[in-house]
Amino acid sequence: MKGTRLLGSNRNLKVLLLALVAIVATGMALGGYAARALRTLDLNTVDARFSVRGNEKPPSNIVVVGIDDASIATINKQWPFPRAIEAKVLDRIGAGRPAAVAFDIAFADPSSLGQKDDVALLNALGGNNVNGRVVLSFQETDSNGDVRLIGQAQTQKALRQAGVEPGITLFPFDPGNYIRRTSYSIDKLVTFPVATAETATGKRVRPFAGTKWIDYVGGTGTIRTVSFADVYTGNIAPSFFAHKIVVIGPTGSDLQDLHPTPTDAEMPGAEVQANAINTVLRGFPLSATPGWVNVVLIVLFGVAVPLAALRVRPIVSIGIAVAIGIVFAIVAQLLFNGGTIVSFVYPLLALILSGIGSLAVGLVTEAFERIRTVDLFARFVPENVVDEVLKSADGLRLGGIQREGTVMFTDLRGFTSFSEKLTPAQVIDVLNHYLSEMSDAILDNGGTLVAYMGDGIFAVFGAPLAMNDHADRALRTAREMLEVRLPRFNEWISSQGLGDGFRMGIGLNSGNVMSGHVGSERRVEYAAVGDTTNTASRIESMTKGTPHQLLLSDSTKQALLAPADDLVFVDEVEIRGRVARMKLWGLDEGPAPAAAQAEAAQTPA
Image (cartoon, rainbow, N blue to C red; front, side):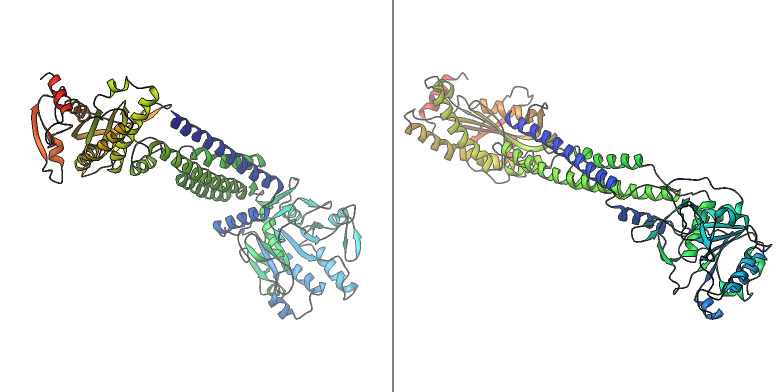
């Protein structure tokens, strides 16, 4: 009963520790999520999802006119270009009737070439082909949201009346200066992508608070890009720009307008703006899940593995954690492909922490369980049987199995009448000496000690672990009991002044043995049942009144691998519960002692 309580308390300890693991893992992940402690890593997983998704079909209605290295070389002018050159390019594009022309070039300060150069640009901005369809970029505003154009303060209203839409080109930067999101407005001025989308469609974008994810269609060059020089020299027909949104801006490697994005470590600012414009036009198709969804995922992942660990072994629980992680990665990617960004790192952190914690708890409690199980069973069965118990499904119960084995029953002759003359303490002392001697003989020869029955012993050889030599082991144990253990015990009895000693009876029978753990949740014990067991018990009882201390069935004799020349045929007898008569064999022990002869004389034939 004590052992059962220990095993039960070990179960309770495991439940308590796994609950603690779930709480700690979930708490740490939720704390990290609230503090955004792993924000950079979580954002990097979004970049990875862009990479896995790959390039999407680029928008056909957006084109970038890039001031690239070839443009600098061809035009052969110092950057920034004279505004007359930019005016000429705007005129050529405007001739194709574009949907909008968005300059990702700042014109806040006057031209270094004088007023004439500025006038050339202003005339182009007011041209009939582009009037009302030009977006100019600004990087700062005053307290009223007004801007500076060519050195002059301008209100947003005045610019719009002049046919120019202002937009601020700033983005909220993530760690590492990554550009992943855009805003509706900054410093009281709508952002450049929003202004461009509104200009091109003639529809107002619904204002929103905070930021929206930019749905990049791919890396640098995914959006159609043409050289500023080709437009300037007329190599591209104006009709190419018909009904398109044209973003004009620097793309050259030396113009210092390259930014890290989820799809490219160095994307030109003009192409970043083009991706943002495309995102606005598509209604911001990429969005993050509400925070409560991430919290639910963190909690679920924090408790999933500990719950599984209550039922499965530690290694299996780790397998479950890995499987959950893989499935989550796949689902997160599929959601991303569908336009939903779910936090990945924090739920995964909860899963990893709970998985490691559950593994540790499983290994620790399994170690405790092994120690307790060994302590509980090692007194009754060999160590290899204990190992078999520990390998069973739940580490505590050994399922029913059938083995070919040999069952042994022993009994100490005359102990009941002997014990009536002693004090209870003396009886227990004598019994413990006897049982210790005989139990050691059984265990040393690989037998399983099934039960003590007063001064009787029930043992089995060949179960639960299969043994080809089960009969030999049983016979060897019986010899050791009779020739070594019993004489030594009798010498001790004599030395204690308790008499001349005892005889014993041993019955052996071989056949199919069904064994396993039986009982309830509160009490479990090992048992071996069946006809072989019942017959062995009856054979042992037949030693009473005979000169033979050992009787074994013919099935045991036939199962011996090594010949036993000292076995003698005793009789062919009827066994209660069996139809056929059974041959019994015994050891050739020589003339029976007087006590045995007296017992035989008193026993009815």
